[in-house]
Length: 143
Image (cartoon, rainbow, N blue to C red; front, side, top):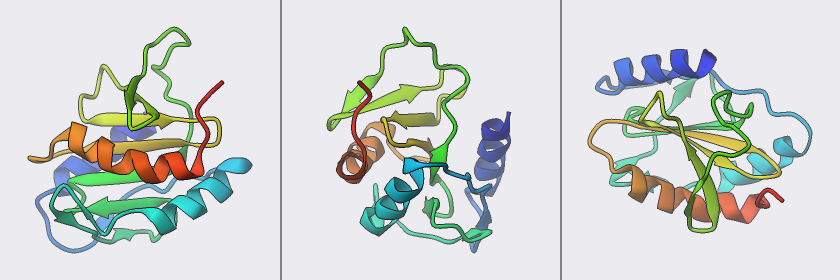
């Protein structure tokens, strides 16, 4: 339910300028170090959109293009993801596409779940491809 609320806030604010509010996750265990490392590897531009700022500030949140694209590192496992679901592999990273929220994708690794919302005119396949490289550098695929 929290992801749905975040998605609604992001979509409502996607056209607004300035800082956007994004609920930061609270990673645990190995996810903390992976998310800290990922924050340093994320691109300044993604699918033509520049980095923005979010509030409250968090090393576990990144936004681009006034939050048309938002990343949250260290989120819980997606509630809708079943053990038998097939992941879409992009750049060596398995992505879960939420069937109820077509703009919500979650990178699935042993170390951390990384949630990405892709809205506006952005192409999800391009965004996920660009984010897969830094995610693969900090996480190991699930066994």
